Length: 174
Image (cartoon, rainbow, N blue to C red; front, top):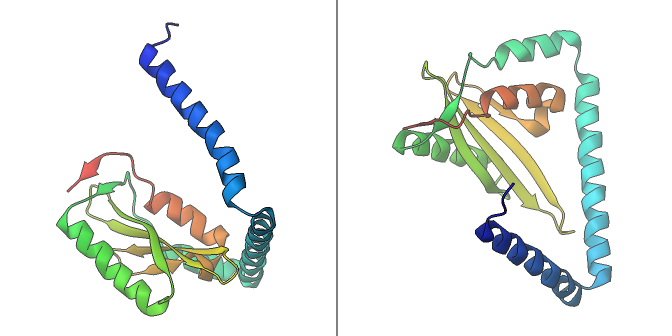
């Protein structure tokens, strides 16, 4: 294997930048603040885990089957959906989310579409809590009219649907 000089220089630059950044972070950030942020982050993650567990414990097999039918994802593959139509879909969905969660802001939003024209708007939102920890919610809107929030149905329902609806194959459709 031949080492390309360009790749070697890039790797050296990344390595040296990261080495320089570590002491700089230690100089800027107070160790007590870092420890508090880390503790608050883990406390928030534990609250979210317990909330998810509480939701899933209340779900009966019948409820799970009903939700799987209600939140069905038509066959893919799904492609990256771009352009004015996709932008309008995402913006309209974001406006709906803002009415429900006004204190949150977007982290990421995009749309997917299959060859039959079925689309999904996938939006990740977050709220920075007083402690500095972040609380994330993921949301999906379907062209079939349903909306799914990760914090309302639990991971057992949300994750398989998200992986089907929001995972694109890399092809761009406008």
